[in-house]
Length: 204
Image (cartoon, rainbow, N blue to C red):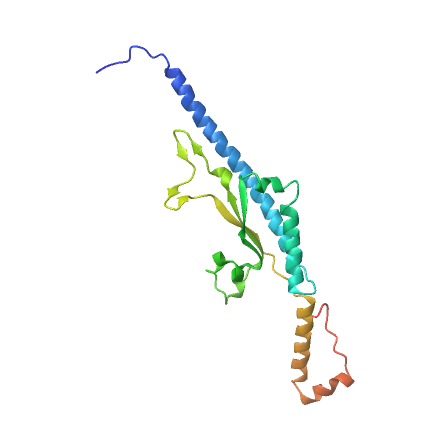
């Protein structure tokens, strides 16, 4: 059995190993903290967009247009836009949804369409954190390598606030309700001459 007669250089090896280990953990903590901060920013963007979609307007299309305008305005903001243009984070526009997320987004199709509790109305977008995908020497990559390539880090960020009924929807509902009232009794069909049908609040 041979023994090392000289131990010179072992401290250098220990230093290099510790330096790479600490450097790798520092990179990981930096990437993780940056990702969590960006998630909060994207959460605010979807919330602001969903809030514009939630508020009542003349038509549903007008609600959608206002939500789309707010989302575009925030994503292209000079302060926020660099986050999504430097390659660290990506907002997948193919997964971007405003409105009934359950009906229009294919990734949400597993929810029952006939269940009113699973009809999510709001804004959703898929955020990919490319900054978390890196390789530390001697330790390997942070993501798994599969047949389709590396598995990245991403998740849906969404805000589901619902949607208020619009003016035209309320007006149509009031007409239908008045027709139902008139159909209760034949005498109600002549009620227009004696009574005025006044719905409460906004009619909904």
